Length: 93
Image (cartoon, rainbow, N blue to C red; front, top):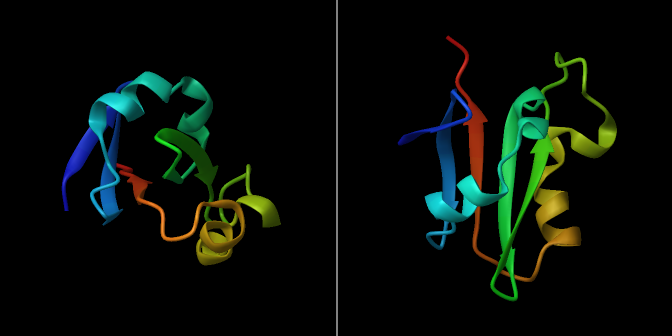
């Protein structure tokens, strides 16, 4: 999979549903807030991109609302039906 870099942190694109990943749009929204998260999900609704951070259970920021194992539930419950989306995974070197 492709590697992207935001704020000196590398991320692997592990899912890119319907070509949801657009680098320029992510770059515009990405802030240091997301650096603490292990995963970032970006979804599109009405032409606008939203980003949300998710964690593995080993991350100190972990809670049930940002558990990456709840990704499918998040997409089904909080995202537009059959939306374009992508998942970035932090690369730890």
